[in-house]
Structure formats: C-alpha cells, structure tokens
Amino acid sequence: MPFKLLMFDLDGTLVDTVQDITASLNYALQPHGIQTLTVERTVKLVGEGLTKLVEKVLEDKSYLKEPVARRFLDHYAEHINDRSAVYPNVRETLAILSGYKKAVISNKREFLSRKLLNLLGLMKEFDLIVGSDTTADRKPSPAPLRYVLEKFEVGSNESVMVGDSKFDIEAGSSAGVGTVAVTYGYGDRKELIKADFMIDDLIELPRILDIASSKFI
Image (cartoon, rainbow, N blue to C red; front, side, top):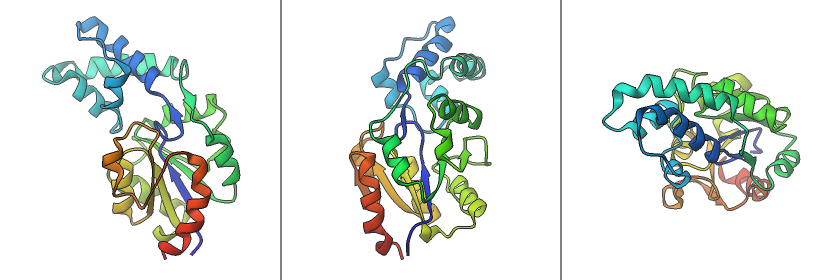
C-alpha cells in the first residue's frame, strides 16, 4: 500500500539547532552559577522537550526549574535562528516528496517550531505542525502521532515517522506507523536499531519509501 502521510521530527532531523539551544541554556543558567554546557553535552540531553532538558541540567537543583525554563524561553524565542541550519539535502528531499501529506511532530513547543520553520523558509513544505504542547502528551508517547493520523484521516499503515532519536522511533512503533531513523542527528546510532529503516542522509528517504510501501502492508 502506498504511503500517504510523512511525519518528521524537527531538531536533529530537519534542522541542526543544538548551538542555539546551548547558548540559550547557558544564558538561563548563568545567574545561578551553574557550569556552562558544551554543545557536545547538550546533544546528549535533548529530545524530550524543555521541561525534561532543564530537569537533566539542574539535577538536584530542581527548585530552579521554573525560573531557568522561563529565562530560556525568553532568550531562545529571540535567538532561535542565530546559528541553526537546515541539514544538507532536506530542502531537496521535501521538494521531491511534494505529493505526500507532511507534518512536523516536535518536542519543541508549537510556537517555537512554527517560528523556526518560518524563519528557515520550511513552513510551506508542511500541512500540520505539532509541538510538545499541542497534545496532552509528547514523544515517546504515540499521542501526537495519533492526533496527526486523525487530522488527516489516514491509517497507520499508510504513514511513516522520520526522526533521529529513540523517542521518535518508540512513538512511531507505538502508533503502528513505519519508522525511519536518520543517523546524522543527535541520537545514538545504537538506540536507533529498532527502526524499520536507517538512513545516513535524508535524500535516501524517497527510495526507502518505495521499498517500504510493500513491507508495511
């Protein structure tokens, strides 16, 4: 059965955002004397949304969660695209896939996801944007994926989730959709092995979809 709907993660899949996230995190932490984060450290922490990210950074200083999160959001909203960049071949691949319905499902808040996609000129490629606050639960819950399936009235066997983290793959598997892991993002390759397919460049996706059309019947 041919696929009709493609769902994409944002950070680490479509856009490399970790430098701006790190800068805003360090800005938020600075008044509290907490050690500066490196980009390499941030990469290992991202993927589950802001609340989880701040909790991981603060560790035993959870009482600072609200002021740090608020300061992060204020800064990040203004500096969301200082150094973020669309990954190679993303624009070209999305153009090739113009015949599909396409959605972004991010653990970044919806207004930030929309802002970033607009600034990078990618918004026009997508029919629906789902953020961490769009539905009651976020990835790895299948809830945001099921929300998208219902919106488009498309079956799970006609849909694919594309992402760079174990949270994307787990959410996709739980929702019963096909899963494609990209290896160039922030996820550990070893944690992506449960995906139906793994690709090193998004330009491989159209070929994979052709192959997979028969696999996920």
